Length: 141
Image 1 (cartoon, rainbow, N blue to C red):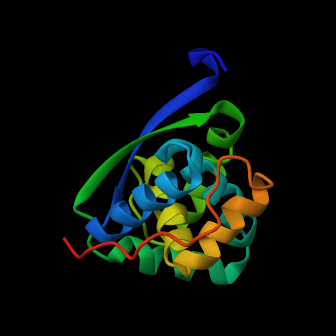
Image 2: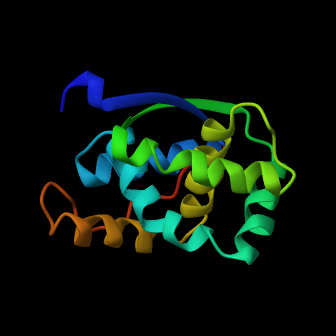
């Protein structure tokens, strides 16, 4: 993929979420951006109902002191303004809608069971480059 086809965004996550994201990337044999995109594709379809606005707001209210820079394919990044409108409509920040939307969606996905997340990544890629074992629980930082 050419760099013209990618968008760079920074997300805010907790230290535990960052550690889990890194562990999933190691276990999957990919990089953090690839795992984040896979997670977004898994969680974004569930975020357009009315109940999703409250879930997004709750996620964004939790502290997220760590910044993680991700590269997203253009078509995935194109989904974020729609989700960003949901975030701002839910009382989230008006500025940085795409980044806030990405942060909220990624954090919702990372809130799942680590073993289930690893298994979903393995299924998504039919086992290519993925270990079958669940990632180790991240150490609290």
